[in-house]
Image 1: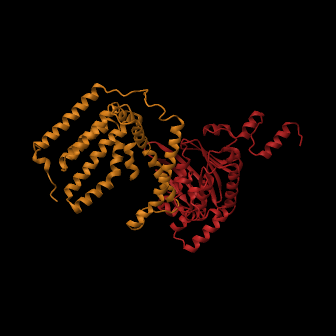
Image 2 (image 1 turned 90 degrees about the horizontal axis):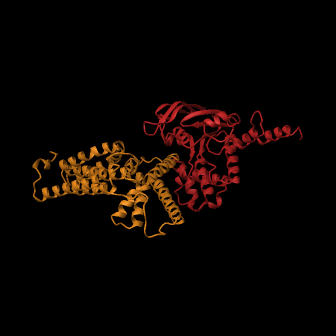
Image 3 (image 1 turned 120 degrees about the vertical axis):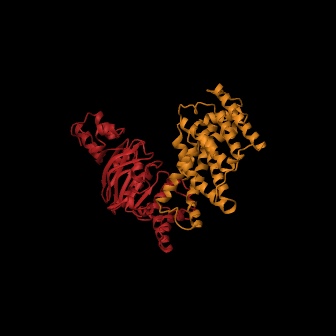
Length: 270
Length: 254
């Protein structure tokens, strides 16, 4: 569980990038963090895994204050997949790249081999085992980056903009994987600008703007609220826009619900 | 630490007396200070030179950035003192550390107050070929980007359990491999992208270039260049005549 209590943060000691953030992410939550560029989304999650330390306030991971834990200790609990896979890839082969985290955690060689093999199969990367990760496509490198975090079985998984550069099929595969991890108890936190992706797949949404937590709650309420979206400088999802065009009293955020509403609108045909 | 040192290259637009000087005047200043600092191996003259530069950072409103640069150099300065003390003398170690601060400060003043475009133009006006001047200004322009990328790569490896400060000296050096390799790859990728982008926008299509805002030396620039030349000549004459006062050769008692 992640608990933030009145957290403030500043890079230069003058301008606050995060202002009085209080939130709780429970075990097994599936959360999207949204907001405009510079809203403080990435800064917030960097506080979770100890890369940054709060200027004021406290953050607890599984009831332990992050101040008392090193990044290496927190990385055993929290897996963080960066936006650009090229920031982490350095190994000679895909298998070595994936096993890097386990080596750092001092796993036995046989355990590393077994885990790497398991994850290569899960991510459909077996044929690339001995290949240089630098020769893979952008989407494949992203998969290697995600695999190299997941092989350590983190309790909490944070992904920064995982859908950038992914085609529709890769996106679908990604969400299926994340859902299955979530069903197995992994807390998933996704930082994204992809509002349609959030609407479709993420049940809870945290909206940030200019370092302030604007809203936190079920996605279907938050992303249908025009006032909140305006405050977070976000453009409404296409379904909400359609609801406005059709002068519906309230917005809907699922295709099925929209179908029902349109049929009602057209006179009850089915 | 290394990231702080790169603060020396982060230009920010400001309207101060230092920013408004011609880049060539500031380049001349940096080279004059470099020559003068290389003329001395004693603590006092180098310290005087160092202290004399400080007000310029206050006038240019870049004092904090300059301090961050110096903070990033503390490790290197300490290393110089240790090595010099072991093989030569502590006194020389301290003097050489001050010289390092003087040299970095002089060029820091230049890079912190000169726009990268003005930098390349100033080089071209002193007859450096355009492609060289452009490459150099581009390299400097990308130093802050490289620093940011180094930070990102470092963080990406730390969250995979890499502990940079752990182990003996060989292990510590090895720990940097996962940072250096992605950084080199990213730099090569960026260089290729920039080359493509430049070529697609007609880079090198014309031999003769014109500038929207051509640099022009003002009276204050000529005055300062004259002053700096007089200072340089004065120091050289003092050294030739061996007229440096004895107190300037003060040595630490240990």
